[in-house]
Image (tube, rainbow, N blue to C red; front, side, top):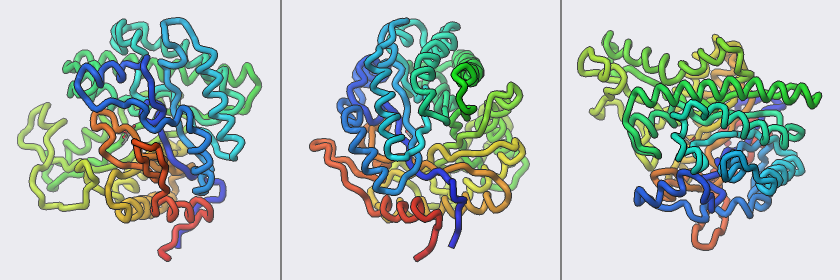
Length: 407
Ligand code: FCB
């Protein structure tokens, strides 16, 4: 039996574009059509059904919920802010508060307004200033009800998928552009961090807690060769910690938001810059279970990463951790084992604030469409019927009691 702290945050995460539906002012909306991808369409109709969904979360024992605000709704045209959209998100946050669910609000979760995309997206040197202006509007409207802010979701995943691998809009493949975007995102975070603190001070509110949600993988050397160990170290430093180090230097992190899903087995063919950053083991000599889209399930990686974050002396929140699978029993096994490993790290002194499962609902998984099922709650996309999965009921026990037991 494992016991978690009394005030621990338990819940799940979502992102606006993946659940709301009809985000037709967003660059993804246009891109999914142009690129011939599955369309997000109505998604989970969460824009209209949020109260129902929060009732379900409440019924599942959640006391926290992460959601994102869709920039393209708030600012559909450059410099024109929609009062109706802002009001909508005030209602959403109040609906959480009314259910005693702590909101964790993300300002940028991969999507941009079309006008921003058309003016160069995050390559535009004004992008950080645009983001700051938008964030100011949102934070002023929601400050009274929100304590936890995430400025950017997975900036490293965003710039690598959109500007290096070229699989997300705007589908560029340029290291140079990617680095430019990375710098603009970093500037946006630092400025927004300071702005949020300033607003809370002006409004005489209790200090907010601001972070990013950083995607981290467990980089595991496939053999103990010097090459592999060095490459795994390098990747960890660069992909996992690079931005965190930068923000800590700028005193622009109040906690660390950690999104953890999987491991990467590092096996490099030869000394070479590309090899060091990209080669992975292709053999099957370290078999582990996988999720429905082929990601290795590696719960021990969560403990390892948390221990590696101890040096920052900052609390950590698991802002995402989850599995897409058609087998719900595997979902519970996944949650159970990750909670065990999280607890192990906590016993060794890592201050963890909360655990937010990805995701509350099945949803639109970006370029992979609606196929992957991550939800604690299943969605029938033709009827919008919600079905609570068995894993959600098992997780509920933990959320309600703060105890993880085998029984
Ligand atoms: C993360 C994203 C989230 C979701 C999960 C599966 O990288 O932040 O939106 O797609 O992966």
